[in-house]
Length: 285
Image (cartoon, rainbow, N blue to C red; front, side, top):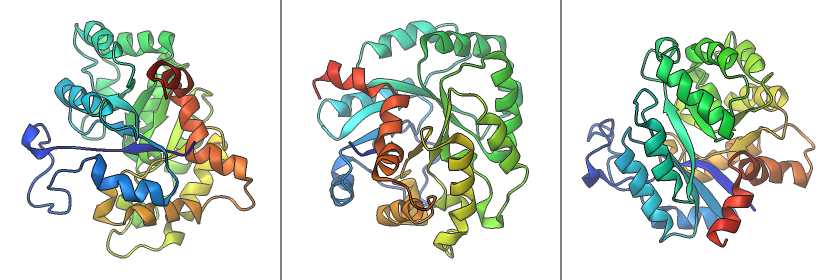
């Protein structure tokens, strides 16, 4: 089964997307499942994983509600405040919904080093570690040291780095991103999403070869069983179509991959990371 492991839906009228403004007209409208259907069919993608785009529990509940209507949604990676006393209580309420399959830490716009040392944050991450519950980590490249420090406290955290850690592809940044990726990949429970790359490139003047080093390094560091395709649609539309986002990955993967290895990157690894085998049984898929 082919799966897009990272995309978003939103409705502006919900008013919890403060980062969406009329100054970015490409994204300043509703994006719902019907808008993505043709692209999924064209690429043989049966399911998608919808990731939160607002730091509210209400948005997570909105996305979970979509799962009851749209068969294309495999599950939702939601949002919770890790630094609140009611974290476990809220988590348990959300987990009653079988489509709640992960939680995301949005670190890219905050002091990640400070946040990831807060006692409650570490406590709750250790708790998720014992549950082996999937955690997405949204960071930019300079925040890798904060993640590496966190992994000293929770070395078995079942987590995935979103968007290959957002190196400055527009500047062809290699070091120290390259070394940090290699270090994180040493933790066997860590995965990496081959997603969100085109918006880190020169958005108006990129070519597919701009991404070659990054894709090959991530697949080499993590191995072909711990990387997964994500379109980052509709955010990718700032620089590329859905078709182009797929093409960037397909045309830069290591050569001579088997069909099984391609299927792993485009679905099987996401099924394993998000524990979707059990989820599909519970939801009757």
